[in-house]
Length: 157
Image (tube, rainbow, N blue to C red):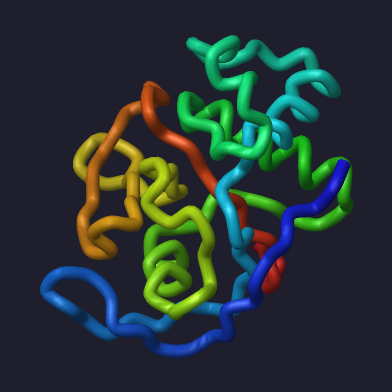
């Protein structure tokens, strides 16, 4: 198991959302890139977790971001990474995702897929995407066209 390359985002206020508002965000480390097909394959092989729909087509490109995982699948991956590394990994909340996305040069493959967050609103998990940093979408648990990146907790949560 290889830990993802992460960038530490310092604690502080950030201008987020639309309309913009100032919000405080605690320190966190976020993976530079979304979880790749190859990384997800390691998880599937190690755990026997069921593969996502359309897995055979995705599998052909190990370096590409995973594109069809449910929120529960993403959480299971985080749990596996946490147990294997001894560090706390989780999905970012949407404030963390947006703060990191707005820092120039922090995140790679931004906009390649919609990404799960751990935030809940309007009856679904909040999805974020890189082509419009303030845009939000909501999904219950289906994973079509959705990937994720992980956050390494640095505040004990």
